[in-house]
Image 1: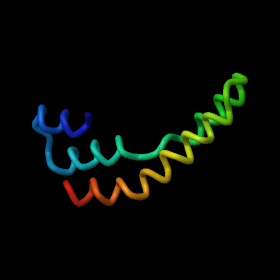
Image 2: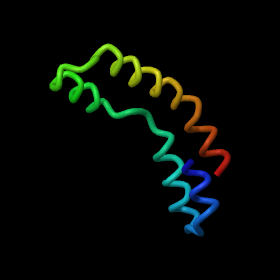
Image 3: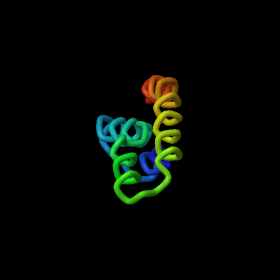
Image 4: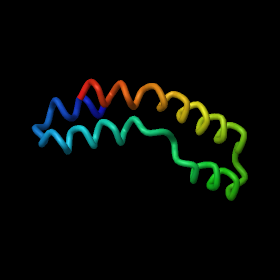
Length: 67
């Protein structure tokens, strides 16, 4: 989606790169804290954090190369 926005709106190259890389970063750990405070599914939240972190290990360098 971020790559589409970069193509749609003319942005300076640095801003475009920051937008795409920022959107590819993993889920914040604070989502686990919110899930815990509001008594939601903390196991699901921790699984999502772990999965997105592992995916980001491979995808962030690829996005960086593509930009």
